Image 1 (cartoon, rainbow, N blue to C red):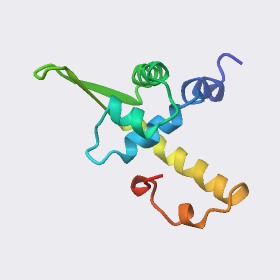
Image 2 (tube, rainbow, N blue to C red; image 1 turned 180 degrees about the vertical axis):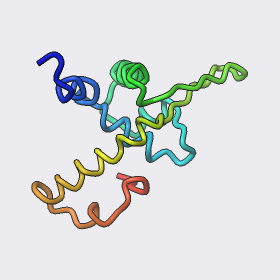
Image 3 (tube, rainbow, N blue to C red; image 1 turned 30 degrees about the horizontal axis):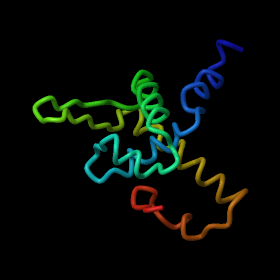
Length: 118
């Protein structure tokens, strides 16, 4: 099983908050999002967990971190890589599955996740 692609992929994106982080980075208006902005959008995530997940997603090539050392304090911004953006197609399919089989939510079904404020 250790060589199974599905198991390996789930190990990357199946951790708590990983999909939500990717979705919130997608929803970022400027294509980049600061740590505290993510923390505020993901109200229940702890700073430690958010930091760990961001590092894991960065290591796996889904998220990139840009550091601006010219300001005080130093500013770090996160955005999706090409791989992360492509993964949004999978998140969209998860949404569609949920709408079809689990949840009656016409408002969500007719909206673009990028514009979603929930």
